[in-house]
Amino acid sequence: MPRPPVEVADVIRAAGESFFESSQKWFTWLHLKVLNAILRCRTAALGGHVDACSKCGHTAISYNSCRNRHCPKCQANARDRWLEARGKELLPTRYVHVVFTLPRQLSPLALQNKREIYALLFRASAETLLQIARDPKRLGVEIGFFSVLHTWNQKLQHHPHVHCVVPAGGLSPDHSRWIDSQQNFFLPVDVLKTVFRGKFVDGLKTLHAEHKISFHGTLAALQNPKAFAAWLRPLFRSHWVVYAKRPFGGAQHALRYLGQYTHRVAISNHRLVALADGMVTFRWCDSAHKNKKRLMTLPANEFLRRFLLHVLPPGFVRIRHFGLMAHRRRGASLPLCLHLLAESGRAPAKAGPEEKAASSPRPLWTCPHCGGPMVLIERLNPRELRLRAPPALAAQHA
View 1 (tube, one colour):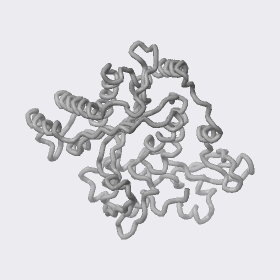
View 2 (tube, one colour; view 1 turned 45 degrees about the horizontal axis):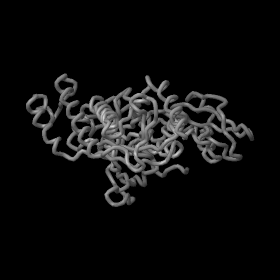
View 3 (cartoon, one colour; view 1 turned 120 degrees about the vertical axis):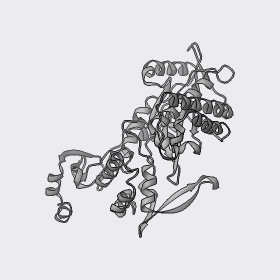
View 4 (spheres, helix red, strand yellow; view 1 turned 90 degrees about the vertical axis):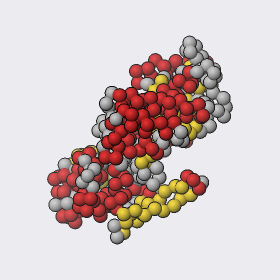
């Protein structure tokens, strides 16, 4: 894929000191860490390594990546490694994509309490799926799934939601058989909305009672329990969005599907179109008009402000597993699920040549001359890299 004409790092450089001066009220050390990582990513400042082709012997020097999870350049390899590991855990059955979204009214509170509100979003959505699936009136099974947190929309605005990818079925209460959902239906969306709303609002009340959420600025009055209770009441009348896609194809399809959601950042470099006169232009999909591609132009400072809205707290886990797929249960539940699915005649299908090629580990870099895999033969620190770089490049980073 060709290098994009504009990168987020270019926007940071263009904004310069004016952005930092205008953002002092909310700018933190974590924001600075993210911006510095993006600026230094794949430059001589982080050192590099020498790679050689295992077929023709061609050698090349490459810069190291910053590996920051908010960096647009560093997610492809992490995604491939994660998908390779998850591919061994996928079940030979159909999968369902369910999305739980927070109402817009909660956005200011979430931005002031990211760790608590995002964790509650994970917990409330997971408990909703587990409870409704376990209900004998619905599916009557125990399910397992993983959830991925996204906090943005196509315009980079704050829009917290979780994507849940769920096998379309589960274990019977006595764990003696696998029960499938209906062919074109998993769980009732209206029921999911109601239960999710109730669990989330109850969770907010608990956090407030335990003094685990803070209120600043225009929200300061909500520290009073009566004011907070009055603020919560309209949430029961607002529109809570839960989206459930019809069950789709099996494990290999699910694996390709997951790659769209697992390691995304707020915006990729390939969506950036232009940077001129302090304005950034980027592509976005208008979901209200059949995902029509449109362009949006923002001042560089506003673009960076929106980008930094989506920086997660240190150590916050944005991909989580629940139910049968929870880490403490996976070792016992996955073999049982595979065994019961095999008994029902759905043993893992043998992958065809194309699927085997897609699922096998791919080299991170291939030789530009013969296409062979490049392998690392030497690591270079920043000083060594400047000495080994071509004269013009060495002078640039001196």
